[in-house]
Amino acid sequence: MQLKQFLQQKMGALMGLMLVLLCTLVKAQTIRSSASTSEKKYKARMAKQPIKVDGKLNEHSWKQAVLISDFEDIEGANKPKPTFSTTVKMMWDSQYLYIGAVLEEPHLWGTLKKYDDIIYRDHDFEVFIDPMGDGEQYFEIEINVLGTIMDLFMNKPYKKGGTFDLGWNTTGILSKVIANGTINDNSDIDSGWTVEMAIPFKAISRTQRAATPSLLNPWRINFSRVQWTLESDGKTYQKKLNQNNNPISEHNWVWNPTGVIDMHLPTKWGYLYFKN
Image 1 (cartoon, rainbow, N blue to C red):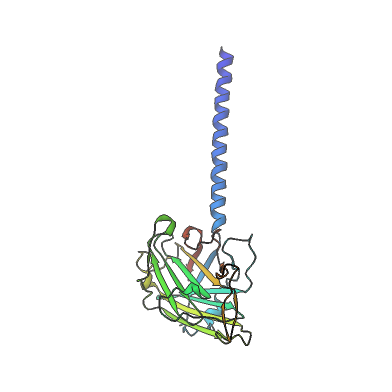
Image 2: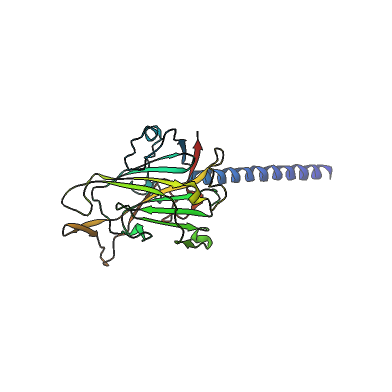
């Protein structure tokens, strides 16, 4: 009887140890999986000298900024790499978050000219910012080669029942686009376009941590580029159609892939750190 009780106690202790090990392994795997979806980080340096938003990105401060050059398909590395390069830099000062982007593009094309038009219907460059980093209350800014902006505020992602506020504006934003080529002219091959913008911290102070960036707490941020397949249409371009006479689906090239064709997943964006 004593031997039986002894064996039962040992077996119970062994099962308990196995359970602890299993929980540890599951937790570790969860941490690894979570980290793998949003591991990209960017450390934005503080601009020591004034930055003029003119689309040239030629100030000394910009030359010191770290360059992002690893855009991928939104679904991840298992999809084809982007056809054209996209590079992004960031800086900041007491008033603004500065973003500079250079987009390689052989066919400069844009049609939308009214503020808050649905800009991703053209080729565009997009910025998504979650200052609290909690996956809710974030901002989206889109711009095309004509310099037309669409911006909105999301109270939470669509999949969580969120709604967009297109009436929200990035008050005080400064932006400039430079086209390196001829827009809507298919008679030549273009080089691309450059975007420079200064986003006022006050404009996104709807969330409590946005007005004053913290050197300790990162924001969540992501960048997207929508690229359509075009064909010649007289002297300009039009979207190429598929066999059902619908435009061929756009390409979505991003900094930090979300794994699905959906940018509205803030917990899968990259991290933005502010440093002196």
